[in-house]
Length: 241
Image (cartoon, rainbow, N blue to C red; front, side, top):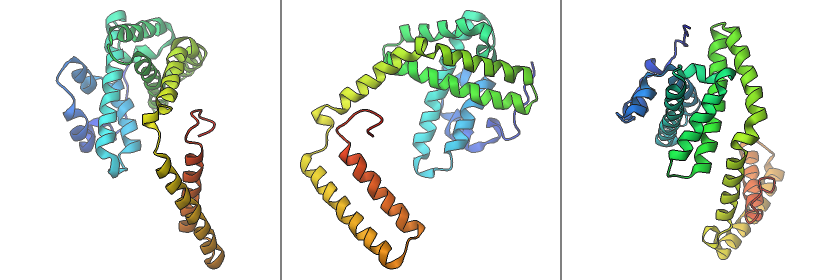
């Protein structure tokens, strides 16, 4: 199966090559990242989304490399289990090999297993979205349909495969946020709260006197969001935040 990648691909982007590919290690995972077109295409699209924010350039490159290595780990395990190519990982008939590859990585990892498993799930989901676009551009409609069917299957099986990891990660995050060491100093919170209230009062007065424009609206919005976040800071659930 021949895949025609977009002309603005990873190899033609000197920034991507210099800041991501050239910094990857020389181990088997690093080599897989550089040679596998699926991994390159998936992570290059994420790089394009983030590259314009120059203030976080180093953080973005590091995050991309981390995602590439994780996707490469899954691909290598899948290749060894099934003797198939990486693109075959995104077909329903090979789903069992994908699950086995994820489980083997989790069992052999000494790190946070729940966070690692959940990260693999989100990366696989993003890979499916990117590949669907690549196949659509190349008019490979049968593969687009296959990915759409796989997405529906993944949605159905997500709770069984990743639900436990998602719950454990959420539970641990909330527990950590409630630790006394993670809370702000009460005096600092009071000072910030007073500053917010005074600033909102002055900003609304300024708007009444001089009229509303984009800059004033943005400042007032940011003050309100800060105030709401501060007031809800001791509650850990997402709806409160």
